[in-house]
Image 1 (tube, rainbow, N blue to C red):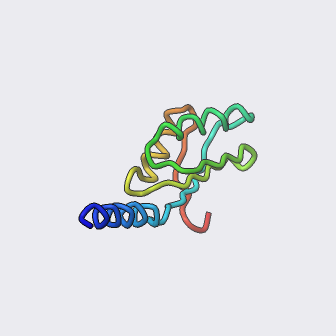
Image 2 (image 1 turned 90 degrees about the vertical axis):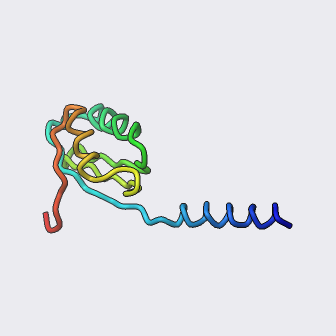
Length: 95
């Protein structure tokens, strides 16, 4: 009985962690000239803990990132894109 209760508590804890809503940020990134730029940015962001999804639009020069705010933040994501060679800043609402 005791093991069953521990298993139930563990399962509920995992479920609660999975239910944490993801955060989405859009960045304006400079110097994106070709599809390889998108690959470079994706690879840089995939190394970051908490990053779940990356969408790169080279024509619009934007990067949209879905991430867990408990593991990283928008400033850290922008810094990683900038360090990959594409100066980036977080797009504010209305832009």
